[in-house]
Image 1 (cartoon, helix red, strand yellow):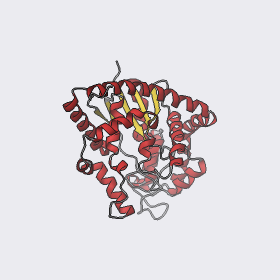
Image 2: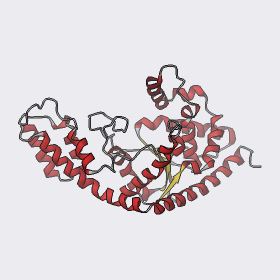
Image 3: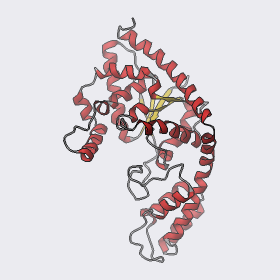
Image 4: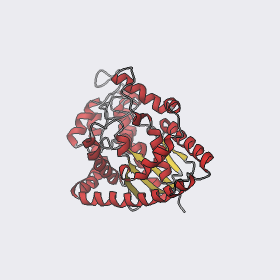
Length: 335
């Protein structure tokens, strides 16, 4: 039997190239190897979007269409909506007794995000909600509700997975050997940089190219991309290794000979930045065209998207129900 793999995405916006290269390509490989559960984590999205539920609801469908457009196969992957699996909420309550507040506050990922929130909203910490502080507990429930054995994570998410493993060990030590301790699946793809050279691509930074961006939007964004600051004139030699335009050429331009030419001309001063950006715009549109064509199909067939979500959620709910039977029996609350 295939091992169960689970991953989730927060529906707070459309997928960008960072999502595609950092996670999406992995999904395409993993969907053949594992029994794959893909969670649209709307409840987790509400931890810091509780005052904007319309945004979360809209993006449940947007992100699903993006995933389908890049080639995630609904015949191989169980797409499901987190809020429609009440067993996750039940497990979250049970697990909350097994984790101290102090332990949650020490979680490196949570600490970083709390620091960012305090900087944004003030230093008194009053902006930190109970739900946000406890989201690693909810993530442990996500994973164990489906007997998740393998979890794709980046380095920055390892503390969250370790928190889940601690909860599993604590649960099993009290109630008996019931839950599986999940193992990590580390992506070998590094984080995609933003157009501004920032190490992270993101909506809040305004430095991302989204899979749904049209030609004019891509043109505007690429023309504003950061290049070698030491290249003042068109015929000045430059360093392509610190140029975001060449960086993105390497991502989307599959013509190795052309890439070598771009690199060589840049170093010799035989290539202007405007010319290079115009070529990148063309290559970017070529790269995104098949994705956007598949996406257009799902835009025109919303009922098909709903059917995929309904089917996957039913399959996920059935698995979670069976898992909950084992949990409640172990906890002596299977009345």
